[in-house]
Amino acid sequence: MSLDLSSDYYKAISKSHNLNQLFRETRESDLDDVFNIWSEFDQASLKEFTTKEIAKNQEAFLRLLHTYSETTFSTASPKPYKSGFSRTQYDKLCNVVDINEMFKYSNKYFGDAGELSLIDTSVSMHNALSEEQLVRIFQKIHIEGNERMK
Figure (tube, helix red, strand yellow):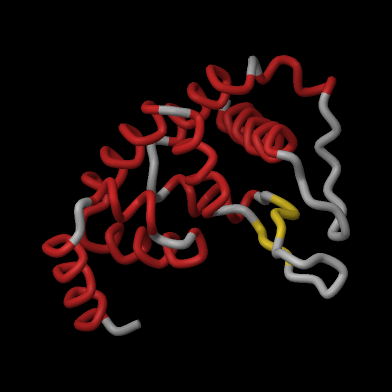
């Protein structure tokens, strides 16, 4: 997308939509694009907005996590499903939210990441991940990243 088109799109969205409505009503597959454009022009306000949203409730947290998770489309399943979350998705998520706050809320909503060994975080391209598995994979990537930084 060209910078001019991105700029026009960003201006149109910021003028015509309530940001909370935009977050709730935009399809997850499109929300990623909206956030990428927003991030180009005002990453600080985007991170502030998304961090406030995930603090409100578990549904907002999951919506953001789902937006950046791998989606599989299969003839074996009538609907697309979440099949993975990788370091690449994690890095993209870092551009749109305070990732340490996201981790904090993952612990608040789903339990302490210290229990990671109790949850199967293996990924199969043929099975949908449960919300808990998706959160645990996010937590595992976050913890491993912080350990590498030490």
